[in-house]
Length: 168
Image 1 (cartoon, rainbow, N blue to C red):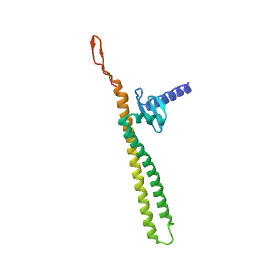
Image 2: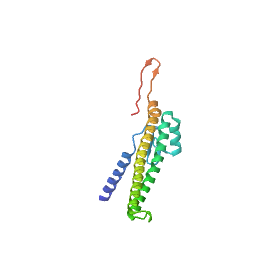
Image 3: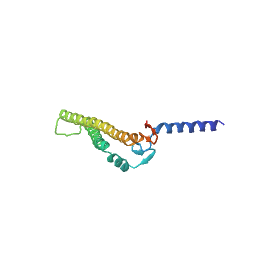
Image 4: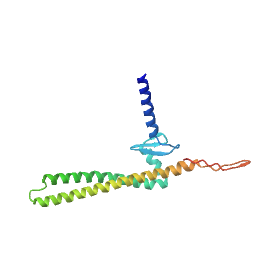
């Protein structure tokens, strides 16, 4: 009996976790989670996701800008981190060059490490801006393509009325 109760509690916990992670969606609404792309509750490919956002004029520019920022930020973050760690390692071991004095080696190493850290920080800022721009493009698409299609104005024979259905 204890085993059945434990399994039932485990099952309910897993179900509540799964339902808590899925957002409240309207039909056709776009969203992404890490590297997976969705339209409504259906997973779509990255190409389909990109094509949907490219077809919308107000979402295309922030989406493209966000993708460029993400790519540039990832390259800068990786390169800057690699340079900074490498420069600090070389400075700590003192293995830059035997022809220069030890003080020159340290100052060159510290300057190189500072440049690497600056590139790393710049890359992080670009990645955050890129994510924000991609989310802005998704929100623009959803606001125009999904939410506005749910608002209706109806004039029926012998009846005049306003039917307003809000998406959220």
